[in-house]
Length: 297
Image (tube, rainbow, N blue to C red; front, side, top):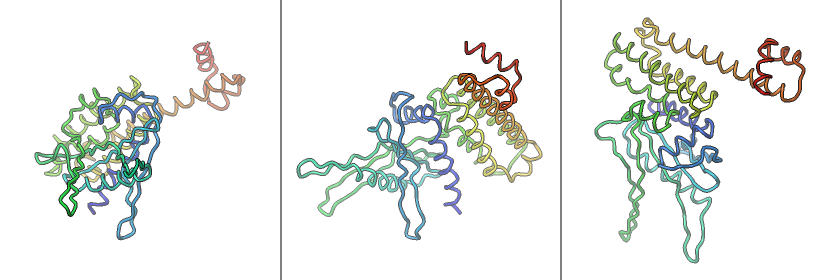
């Protein structure tokens, strides 16, 4: 059961990390204190291994940026420090693919790694280490820094342009609500979603930190996580928490569809298509198409 729960967050993280290059590079820059160009090329290296029961395990992501810099991002819902073994294993397998021989030495370069703890407490470490000790007592220390997501405020996540982590911020109220849902919790949850998470996602789209497509995906992920975390709480159904999110999703879908329609119309105008044809395919009015034409000129 715990493994299935973890998979929900793993899948969410994988989807987040396949958003637009601008959005993902913003996250990498913040997590690893880099200043990579937002139009940098990203190559995804999904690292796969097989467990004893023949189940597949796929690393959250090892990303190669501009064909040289490698970054490994893993998320963890609890404080289990053994995640460092998994991170090392994936990084080692990736490094083996690009091993370099220098004389009698073989050099392996592991990706720069970061573990995101989705929930944290007093005992959550700021870094986790794996000590590899040989029989003759030589030691190698592999250390991975961590990020404690909920230790950040929404304002801090926005400032550092880590907006694509926002759907996971829905975990902020989980511990309180697990003690027994109240009307106060419902109000706090609405406030967190509407004036915190959703507002941040939309504002980051407005300023260009994420695309309109990213915005739509993030709000969709927010809905999925809401259903997983709080969807079965009757009080929240009565308080209309889910309805608020559903209305937002419908509106967001309409906006995304309108933007796509306008892009199609602009493309057809650039190709010299007659206005009658554009009206037929996009269902836009002649007046709306003339306005697009005037802006293009």
